[in-house]
Length: 458
Ligand code: NAP
Image: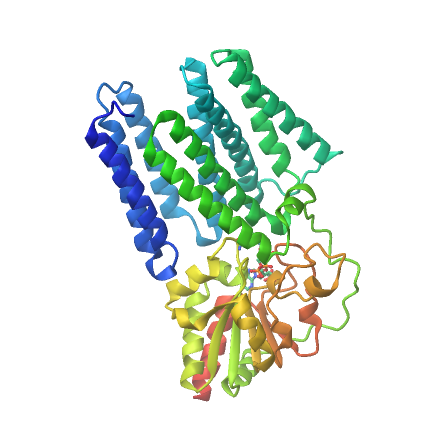
């Protein structure tokens, strides 16, 4: 690194600064788009700096990789549906981990002369990167519906431990015996890749977002370690930033689901039904006109959006409806559960896109005390995040997950298409309570009809 020209080091340093500024921008929906663009320029600068290293070889191969990767990212980025973003995040994340592992593999295969600390960091980065690569591929396959079931091996935790032990032992051998030994390198990577598969396959249902976030943190760490090996400060800083952000997000999500990380990884949830508690009551249907009247003459309405709102692209209609209610003197607030939808911040992004002001959007902790004073909780395409069995049924797979207290509102209206369960596959006791009515239909036309009725009432 010290032999590199100043302009290369400057470009890398500038890139790293832009990554940090970009991440800062991403901390609020208002500045997130700008943050992404700034981080993109950071990446451009870091790549330009790399390409300017004097005496660089394989420029043709690099150009081909940049063109192929850039085109694939451009096309998939433009085409991906909002509801498919988690899969995309998972697979891109896996690519980052795989790239870090590949850097280490090349360094080992070349037998590059490094001191033992650098080799040790390369090994740790390679292990984490390889686990993150196959683990993220499994996460992608699950979210994409390619892998429909959680696969649990007999003695799963024992198998995980043995594989982890073998991977660490092979890594130690690489450090002690030195690289340049193809059999050892192959065995190390085969075991590390298998470990990612085996650890992730049994994890199912509602735990997947936390796992993706954890792999995101892993990828950051792996990239940071390999940055050290290559003497590239842009990689080190980008890796540390991603690793820290991923770790914080993982902790926040695990807390939001009330699932310790160790529990998520080693005793995974598998949705098997609602649990042991029988759900009593019946489903009661309401029409758009009843729903409109109930909200039009209410003082306070809290809207709970969920995955179904994203599927139906109903966010614009929902905001149009909220404006009509506000014009009629109704106080309208939006309650966001930390794991509503299919990715962190999913609902915030959609509501921001629809133009909902940020001061109407509230997190679980901020709004949960207000449901008891609300006349109506309007649950739009949400299910697990308002399921009261999470509070009461110890046998339920979602037991312990904090939920939005929609059931405490005087009236609950649930907009959904039919009797479909949520992501966890658990039946929802809220829908059967006395104060709950179902407005059946795709969320977009259903809310459009409510809007028509509200306009007629005005
Ligand atoms: P959910 O529990 O998955 O429920 C979504 C509901 O929307 C379903 O019951 C479905 O019922 C309804 N729906 C689907 N399409 C619809 C449409 N077009 N119109 C109206 N309704 C529609 O959603 P959630 O309450 O948002 O909970 C999120 C779940 O996903 C949690 O279990 C969470 O752990 C998990 N998860 C979260 C993330 C994350 O990071 N946020 C990532 C992965 C998984 P019908 O079929 O009857 O319509």
